[in-house]
Image 1 (cartoon, rainbow, N blue to C red):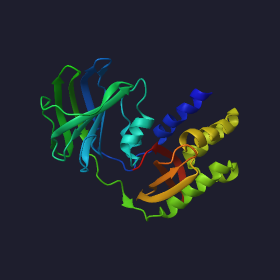
Image 2 (tube, one colour):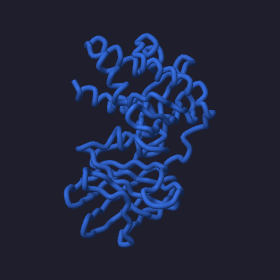
Image 3 (cartoon, helix red, strand yellow):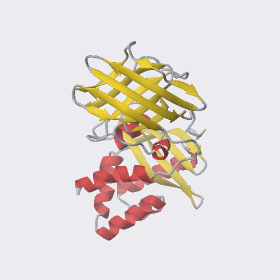
Image 4 (tube, rainbow, N blue to C red):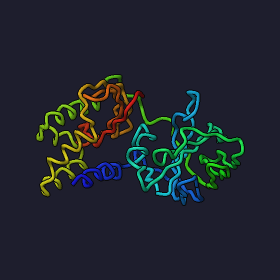
Length: 285
């Protein structure tokens, strides 16, 4: 039963629809990444703008490579791509390495975490050989390195990521923010009627299946405890809207952790903003 609800997060991620259709060729990746414990056969890559694992506040292009394939349309729906990869994609089987580049495609470092004691918060070595460059709306090339702690020879070709998620929402999140706060209240109260009315079509389908299988109460508890992390204080801090999709950004706390932050994904269906999923992490945005 616990595994069944643990897999619900992955199912929600897989159900997210792309914000906009794209005719660009998909990302490709190949090669190997090896350290003292693991050797990865690279099978997927995904590029996004994010914070560096090193020093400085300037945004960098991060190219996540993995032994598993990425579903770009699912990750595109999140504002915090790094958080989505960390919590909704990477696991004991799917390992991820993040390579960093400046806006012109110059290699600036890497970071990864495979398991306790095996990773690198941020590493840079001038001996890394890079042919990566930006051209024709793509970031493509090869990175190679051989050292005492790790070695890699990775080739990738990824679309240049968009810098903006969408148009900014007002500070209170506007209508999407109001809908998400109503969802929070209904989930906290376990008000099934109110909660069901605030779910998007995909979530309603999951609700109905779980209700039929006798698992509905367990799924609601999973949403409250594991996904929503029992938030008891929430401060909406704006967000973004792109057509019939929105992301609401928030900070909050629960009875155990003072500093939490996250985002909620919503869809506009039948003229109403409805909740698809939310994602919470420890720390400050």
